[in-house]
Length: 411
Image (cartoon, rainbow, N blue to C red; front, side, top):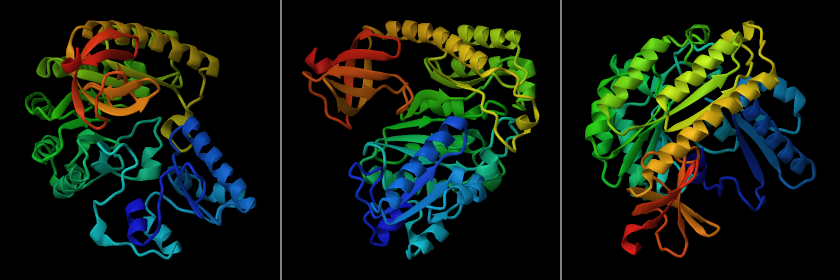
């Protein structure tokens, strides 16, 4: 959207700190309650600014707009127009801008210049009971391999060194275009892009996981030894109710295979606590699973009861306070695990990509950490490192979710 607008001579800024734009476009999320609330609050803030004459036009796009367009139009008449997830051409036409097909794969970065999220497919064919993504994003559609590689080349030419591959279902990639899961082939293609030094995988689905991907992660030095696989639960009754297409036993076998095939890999997962019907025993099974598998990174969401999903027909029978207690209990276990894993890193030298300077520290990440959601490495600013560059860092101390160190060449 930003690249298209810029090509049409618009001056475009992502999340301007100056609040001086004449036209505001709010890109929304409609996945769970917290995200919807943040989106609505942002729209209301700019609706008030429009009423005060501070902005001229207010448009809303993205998932919330796609999912609740009719209701939003009635509740927020200050908004000039709402657009769904597939309506970029209509949004551009409203702004009297031409959709330029030759810009396919071109984009403006909203992250730091050295790292970029790169979506390789859109939509999802999975039937997960709790998930509203298919309602907003439709069925799975893979980008052709050559298009993804060209986008990677474009990003590398702009100075991007790290690609974070994302999709609603990364491991389904290619089935619709090539009648086969070809994520491993895509990874090998991307490893040939000059300038890209790290490639990491987020949002892998456990059921029917393409095992051939593991050899590429293990053997290709550009692929980070990192895999984000949201497992959601580890109790068979919950996995069945969630329609995950996998059992607890098969989940455990997959995790064991991944760690065997890629020694030293960091595994990140996401869990849901308080799904309808979750018993104390289901919760205990999940706690035992977390303790047994010692995930390097882990997040937990309290279940959000979403309209038009299969789970919405179930009674949301776990009280909110119980959901939060269970979330806190899981995260307390994970905090101890993370602290122990981090302590084991003390004395090691790790390759770190530095993202920013904050307070008295340069802050970066190892190959085991994705931007914004994972652990960080802090180096006191009295030591010099270059933002956007890699440096070898000797880890000198550790906290639950952070590492501290000094550059090897300054130790």
